Amino acid sequence: MNNNALLELRNVSQSYGDLRVVQDLSLQLAKGQIGCLLGPSGCGKTTVLRLIAGFERLSAGEIRLNGAAVATPHFSLPTEKRRIGMVFQDYALFPHLTVFENVAFGLHQMEKSLRGPRVMELLEVVGLAAAANKYPHELSGGQQQRVAVARALAPSPDLLLLDEPFSNLDSDLRERLSQEIREVLKSQNATAILVTHDQHEAFAMADEIGVMHQGMIQQWDTAYNLYHKPNSRFVADFVGKGVLLSGEVIERGRVMTDLGGLYGELPDAVGVGQTVDILLRPDDIVHDDASKLQATIMHKAFQGADILYTLRLESGQQVLSLVPSHHNHKLGEKIGIRLEIDHVIAFRRT
Image 1: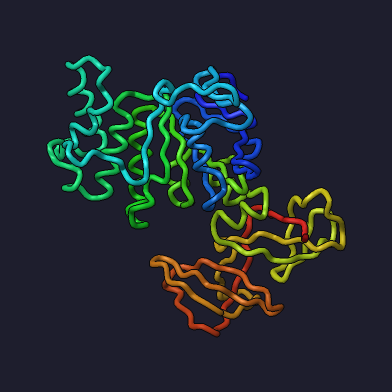
Image 2: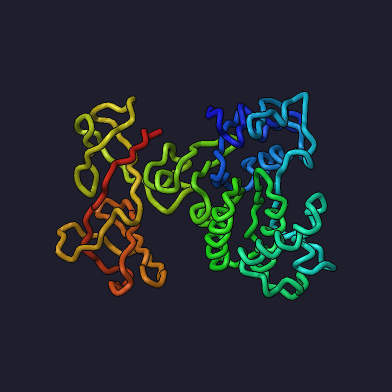
């Protein structure tokens, strides 16, 4: 663990009776860093956020903020003393207060003459200075969420927690707002941790992401590494699209597949003659009219600039290919493909 980390979770576990929802979880965030807990419903990510906030007392482990313990099984610093800001998925704005008054709500301990300038500074940052005198019902969902972020940042908390903050918004707005909020947090040098089930939100906002499954972080890494270098089948399946193509190890570091031979690192326990599963992303399969390797189009999903093709190889195995949309082929048609892969991710056949 880094002694300079603003937030540290050390071997944190949480149980409700016999049900263990968080298991021996550790992570750290440096000041100014944006982290994310990404995972399906029920994986324990929101429980971790509640433990950090002090809404629940943990069963085992330790949570530290700025080097000081704020939670152990025997001690829990009250939420209001942890200098933490919260942003919820339902915005939690006060309907009877204006935008200005909502942002100013948590500034009662600040000198009165400084409150107004601080509120307007943040409304400028989130692009809502002109809406200062409006009420929440007069704003769009995206605008309300920006107000909620400004309100959480107003007291200059040490840590900001965001609990599924964009889940009530449509997908296009979610991704755009994720990028906007990231810029706001970076401009304030804020340290934040986001909880979401949406990988696009995670990729747009976070510096580092922890993929959670069954109460544990499976991999804590950058978005690039989670997508291109997943350390488990679960991470490979949860992050991005892809298929697992079977292949036979014909020599150490070389696998023969229906798409030809591949070279790369293989799991230590895999020997010559054994079968492995190779992770192939849609961008690993390139459409090439000149290729002798043919595949049959089984399904196509138009995505604007691209078409995602599901292709059947002669063996019956299927792969995905992301192709520029001006290559518009028919179902059942055969097209030429070739493998263009930078590194091999292989999993031992179970």
